Every structure is written in structure tokens, then in C-alpha cells.
Length: 166
Image 1 (tube, one colour):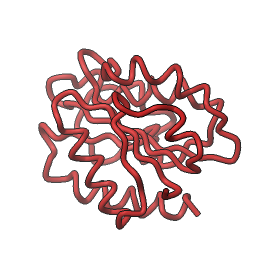
Image 2 (tube, one colour):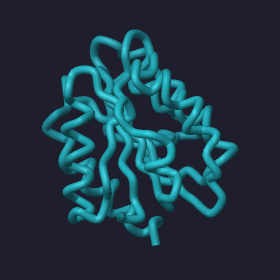
Image 3 (cartoon, one colour):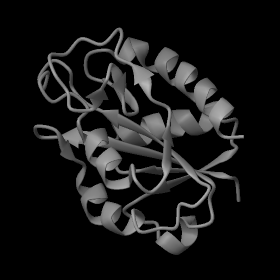
């Protein structure tokens, strides 16, 4: 077992793909789990969590996370860290871009140290509750409109997480 667990919920497959890219950028030093299939017992001993979700509807959390997040948030996070990434559509949902990560953030922010916030620079959207004081609460990804930026954004983000996950 590695120290890092990548937990994801995906409806259309894009989050699965991004979660695998994150795993690859950690050179295989991260285990990956679909929240629809994992138990809390399997993940409770990890030190670091990377949480990935898609944003559905107008800022809503992905369905599999809806059922898993309340249980996950009750884990003992003493001495642990978490990072969040969320996919969204910045053109069609420009007033709620990647807001699912704010739902996750709100649920766990008082329980675990959240790392991996990124500056609100280089994104095209109108509004998002997932931006606080000029920083995203995690990494927003837009595979619909800015797919050409995904790899660069992931590489930079994972490098920053490697500094945090020591």
C-alpha cells in the first residue's frame, strides 16, 4: 500500500481519466479507487488523499460522491492531508464552474488539512464558489473547453503536492 489514495467518482469517464493521469504523475506511488466500489476500511490507513469529482448540473457533486462523502468525512484524519480536483464546463456552466470541489471542501475542511489550492489565473469562467480569496480550493479542470491545458495543469499541481506529501 502506498501513502497516497486517489479517490474518484466519475459519471462520463473524464474524471477516471484524469485520476489515472494523476496516478501516473506520482510514478505509480499512489493507489486509485472508485468511490462507488471502495470501502472505508480499505482507505482509512492512507496518509494522503486526492479527491476527484465531476461537477454535474449547476455546481452539483457527482452522484457517487453524494453517497460516499458523508461516510468519508467521518474518518479519523489526524495527521493527514487531502487535495481536491474537480472537472467542470467553464463555458456552458460559467457561473458554477467546478463547484463540486467546494461541496467536498465544505464537508472536510474542518477535519483534514487541505493542500493543493491553485491561483485563480488562466481560467475562463464567470463565477464559482470554489474560489476563496483568489485561490481555488483545489484544481479545476475543464476537459470540454480547455483540454489542451489539462496536462500542464496536472503536472504543476502534482509537483506542488509532492512537496506537501512528505
